[in-house]
Image 1 (cartoon, rainbow, N blue to C red):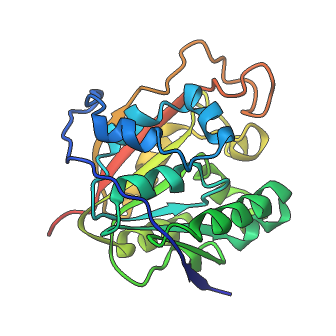
Image 2: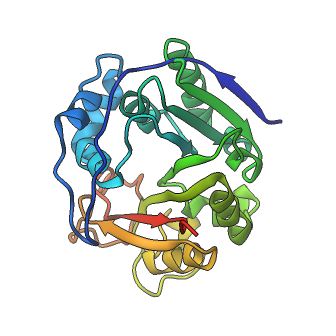
Amino acid sequence: MHRFLTLSVAAGLLASTTFASGANPQASPIHAAAVADPSRPAEDVDRDVNRKPAETLAFIGLKRGDKVADYASGTGYFTRLFASVVGAQGHVYASVPSELFTFPNIVKGLADTQLWSAKHPNVSVNFAGALSAAKYPEKLDMFWISQNYHDLLDDFMGPVNISAFNKAVYDALKPGGTYIILDHVAAPGSPANVTDTLHRIEPSVVRKQVEAAGFVFVGESRILANPNDPRTAGPFNKSIQGRTDQFLFKFERPRR
């Protein structure tokens, strides 16, 4: 099943940003406005201290008028931020792979996002199988996946053919479009099943897989890095919850 539920909008704008690998652009008043949007629920605001949304928005370079996919959108945390940034001329596609519907929090997150989007017509919610959910009615400026890339490799997701998934992302983007991946860092040399046992993945594995699809690595941000994370527990473990070592990668579909 593949549906788009076109629903509602928030105004906002974000100037284009540039950066070097490892550097972080300074958050602007536009980023702050998105974070301060009064339509954001209290639980989103509570998560800001660990997620550093203004800095994240500055790094990824999302701007007014952009078309962006929030893939495996979860509770809609980033969907709401993106909607404020892209404004009325942009659009956010909150995509939920149907393989995740076995998790009650995902079903609730989908319902909450649909309800919120009823007043934000620049948001559409779509749900389908993992690969079909990565197809959109227009070419995108950005494709975002947060803390879920590792899940694609797990049995409960299929597993998804990762080469086919990254090709689908490539095809979904405009030339020059960006592919952003945020995930939990696994220790070097971790076994392949670390994606399931600890919900982590090695950054080098992700980069190799994405570059194999034709993407060019643009840079990374260390704003969510935690060198004190021993990487021996999963992100739901109370000892590290909300404070895992995370990588944030930016890739580009070549313009030619």
